[in-house]
Amino acid sequence: MSLTEHDKWKQFWDEQAKVTDLHQAVRGDKVFSDEVQSFHDRQLLALLDPQPEDDVLDAGCGVGDQILLVGPHVKRVTAIDFSPVMVERCRERIGSILDNVSVEVADVTSLPFPDNSFDRAVSIAVLQYLNPEEVEAAISEIKRVLKPGGACVFHIKDMASPTGLMITFGRFLRALTKGRPPLEYQYRTYRWYKKKMNRYGKITGSYAYGMWTPFMPTRLISSIASLEVKCRRHTNLFPLGKEYYIKIGFNG
Ligand SMILES: C[S@@+](CC[C@H](N)C(=O)[O-])C[C@H]1O[C@@H](n2cnc3c(N)ncnc32)[C@H](O)[C@@H]1O
Image 1: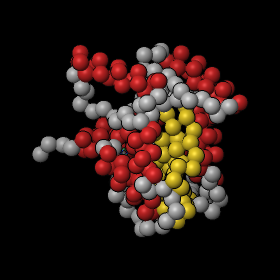
Image 2: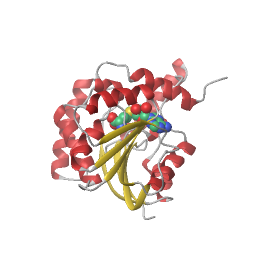
Image 3: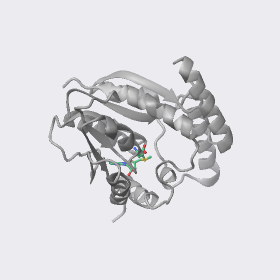
Image 4: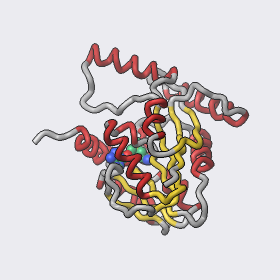
């Protein structure tokens, strides 16, 4: 029986989970300095606005970066990931640090929780690995398990950004010369995601970052990311980013 794309991604993440460096396991080559990463983290926290009494869902938790960020501010975090190896790695990492967290093997397109279970949710760097039907299923499932008035912060990549367009062009050239790689995450526009999300809720906030290209050396990417962080301290007008955190409010 041939494997679906979904199965291939699961195998991919099972293998990635074995990579020794935690950051590389979920994000490939490290490009952020700690300062840049912590600035982005603060933006994510500000958007999510976690409250001490909140039950939070982390959908697609990887090795638990968002659990560590959100866990100390809330009552409980329930994290899921469809890769059993990733879940094991995450449990090992989080177990000795936080005691209000459970990590389970589950698929974001079919969540094993009753309706109205959570106050807030995060799903970071996950939607690009799903096909359009799965994206829709994931948003619908997250809405179902959130209480009325709940909200989720998603991370997406915007193909319509200058960087996104360069990446798409780079992919096109590579496909011409070397053929398509067996697995490639989906590059879509902010507009595409917005349309999908507007069917279920309302976008109530967003944060853009990541104006680097695949052709830049890591050191240059880090410098640009630092510049981006500095600009963002003074203004929200930084339209060149290709990565977004988008907050969706669901009203039952
Ligand atoms: C790029 S990593 C991001 C992990 C984490 N959210 C972070 O930002 O560090 C993507 C994660 O999503 C998980 N994932 C992908 N598709 C999924 C699905 N359908 N259901 C649950 N998890 C999924 C992968 O196993 C992987 O751990």
